[in-house]
Image (cartoon, rainbow, N blue to C red):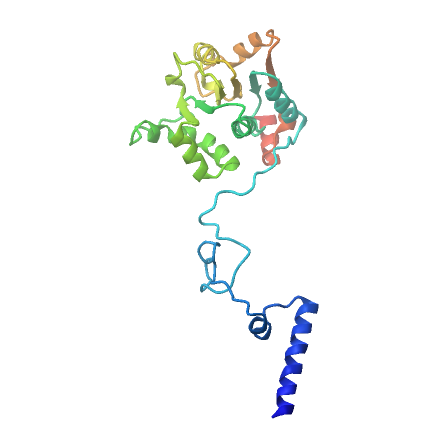
Length: 275
């Protein structure tokens, strides 16, 4: 009897020494000796992960109830994009003209989100003309927001890439992000706001003049568009005329992107060169 007790004591002593040496503190003998109580599963860690049976603790919390925990670093991919980003930082009025795929809309929305998160502005106002791209899709059901949703989808895509959709919906509910059609912008003064006017090539000269004069105190406005992709009748788009006139204003930046700034599929740049 004495020899067996001696063997058990020696075994426990060896187990404790091995646990201390290798950092293994989860053995039954060590827990019993040190009177350490194991916490219940998932205390303070939310629900068990998908596929688990409520077993041990996991360092990876569930993705179901958390917001996007990271943000992509905003870096220019071409000289033209770098020029556009610098112009947005230095001017309160920027016109970005260039072909499709140069990142005009994405950079403008990303800079707007950056300014809102930094507290430089109090809200974001995104505006886009509701013009069909060459074909009539008929009447759309729903209220105004439902009818405008297909036209404003590119702006939602850019927002959701910089923020989680849960946060986008929360900011829109609070009025910190507003997506409005151009037709409802007349008479407004946009103070303490970051304004993005997208697809400006589908605006007439009168509409652009109205939009540009909405700029208020402590606000930034970025107008993006491709003068060569207007869905209006020839000669009606006012973007090129407005850009040429505003070049003479020293405090307004007119940035023209080129085919070398296209960051989509390489075939896009090839097609634009011949179409």
